[in-house]
Structures are given as C-alpha cells and as structure tokens.
Image (cartoon, rainbow, N blue to C red):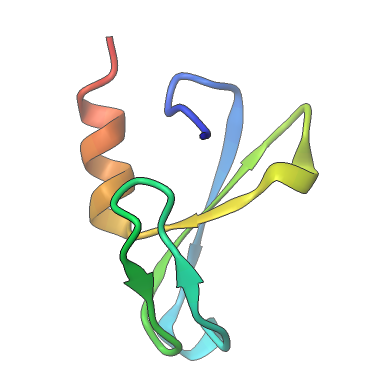
Length: 65
C-alpha cells in the first residue's frame, strides 16, 4: 500500500472526471463513478498508482509519524 510519507504525486479527480469505479486501498470501500477523489502516484513506481477517498488520504497523511 502507498504510504503518505512516500515520495508521491497526489492529484485530485473532479467528480465529472471520475468515469470508473475504484476500491480505496485504505478503507477498501468503493469510490463510485462521479465521486471526487485522490489519485496517488509513487514517483519511482507510477504503475502502482491508487485511487483513494479524499478523506482516507487526508486521515492517513495526518496520522503519519
């Protein structure tokens, strides 16, 4: 799983851009089509990008050591 302390690029996906359904790696809940969220891309492994609920990413980033 991507850690908020990793060297990552975080992009916000607007609701009108969210055309597919994804599963958040933090809570394992569904990110539905049309729901704004974050795409987190590790700089050294862009193929490992993941889609996160905005709130899950914010909470994970806030609780980092």
